[in-house]
Amino acid sequence: MRTTLGLAMPTKNIIRLNARLGDDLHALLEEVVTHEYAHLLAHKRHGRRIRPHGREWQALMRTAGVPPRVRIKLPEGLSVPAGPRWLHVCRSCRSETVAGRPMRRWRCRRCYLFGFGGKLDIRRLTGHPSLERETT
Ligand SMILES: [Zn+2]
Ligand SMILES: [Zn+2]
Image 1: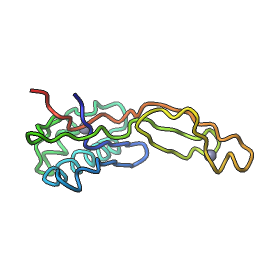
Image 2 (image 1 turned 180 degrees about the vertical axis):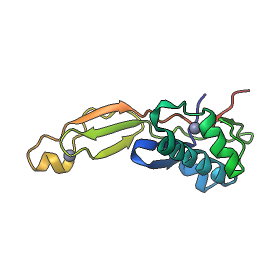
Image 3 (image 1 turned 180 degrees about the horizontal axis):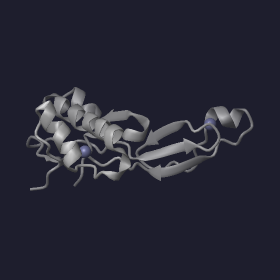
């Protein structure tokens, strides 16, 4: 069972956080933000040739004083819904929308209204699912 607490999209400089982190998982917020931010930094410094949780990322985590762990054990009885994992990109204006599943009938509203069709390319987010729930 995989649970995404955070997601980094380094090419867009975007970090997404699971909404539960603002609530009952607040204790994990700092670690998840640091985890994702280290991905953005690692990408900025080393480009895309590095492994997501390779030594460059690990070094940044240690600098921040956070153990570089990829899996985390959630408190007993807590479950977190998986975050949105599907990116929809407008072929005309490149605007992006994220959803929990591929929405093949969606169109970019603005481009549709202006007669450009507004078709969307759909792909699974390449950001890795960080801090998954550990299965015991
Ligand atoms: Zn568009
Ligand atoms: Zn990660």
